[in-house]
Image (cartoon, each protein chain N blue to C red):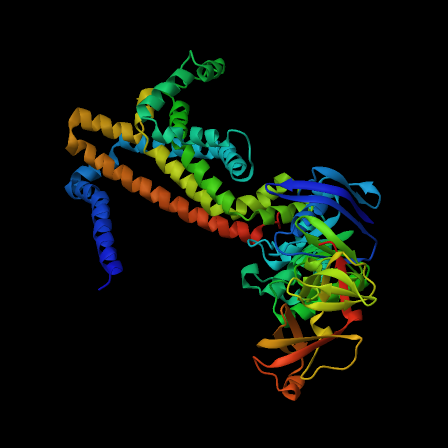
Length: 351
Length: 269
């Protein structure tokens, strides 16, 4: 339904360059990027608030690149909601209908329906400065959805909500998408992406650097930036050499990795998930495994247990459960063995 | 005792002196105006006419010029265009010009030889020594107050709100009247009141263009130069009181208007 073809747009020192994107009906597309990566600018181009310098935007095969914003039927919900502060909730939701000069009865019915769908029918008469972040978000969504947009654009809709409100809103967005609403959702949060997206695009410095299904993107990150989003903190730049028929990657600090079938002489970036590493107090005998000796330099609590940092020449970050911590009796300055399978190493060529 | 509190004390003393500087002459004038003299002035038909003329001409000038000034202020707040700084400088020019010089410049424009004067005379209107000429003089010196205040008001309205309204299908005109103006209303009102007040108090430019009919500042000057301080004082006090009354009423009305506007916005579509 939506196609962006080679979109370029310069904004001061920043530029969106060579953006290509294709979206089918009913898609939930999450555009993941840090602040300043250009994701909001891209949304504004699609909505028609800005125009690209070059490139084409097609919606249902119609060229809408220069089409008036009012005629695009693309709804956008801004990060800070942009709820009109001088109107109450009812007037906010009714605004697009009044602009279209619909009659009062029809407006009242539609607003009531939209408010019920968003579970805000009880606050219709309330002033907007009396609303919580979650309520403001729902008002903004109801106000946009009442226009029946062909495409819904969401700019960081979950960023300023607390955890329980986030879960509510995620459920609501999933239901909207299930009912057929096509959505582009921009966020900096990897968690939002994996819990909502059918497809993911990662945007960095004004370029979409990787795109695909959630599994494709995060199980096979093309570079360090995407890998960081997947929670990977172990990156190693290595030169490949061949020893006894094996490929060995050696880092600048002489840490050695056994790799599967890499050509000697090449320079690669290795990615290793924190969860793929196992710690042991004694060296395992399995020759297939990578076994590296190091010293514990930091232990900090993490979401699922502990994150242990090991200095083995290069730093390894390992997630372990609290129970394993006790079994291993890990302490700072202890010597441990870092073990992992070659199969768990993701090799990224070039940068 | 720390350095901050010493500084605060010095600032408070200096502030008191500044306040006293404003209040003392006005208080002196009120104190030196006798009750009988004041009552006579209140009954003086010439004073009535002059004060009334000043009020309605200044109000009308402000109202008429706000039709152009408010959209102009929006443009200045929202759009980038070549020579914008020069345009901003031109707007502020009347504030720094000697007002008699402004009057002379304006006289050349509205006299029968000037462009506007010639055009007006085609409709049988002589702008010199006429309330419309006075209105132009008032507007010339006071317009920057409305434009600048309204511009700051529009600039303070988050652009995202205007973008959201456009995205919801509103035309640019609709966005201006339903989002930008209501949200900048307080600044626009302040600018309106300031322009009105500045127009009312104008003397220099008006005296060049229209000695008659006499606006209050010209009348006060005329009483002073013909009869002396004792005759000018009661007229001044009367004018100040009426102007204050009018300003306060206007301010209160505009605040009420704002509340009403907020409550009923968009229900009028």
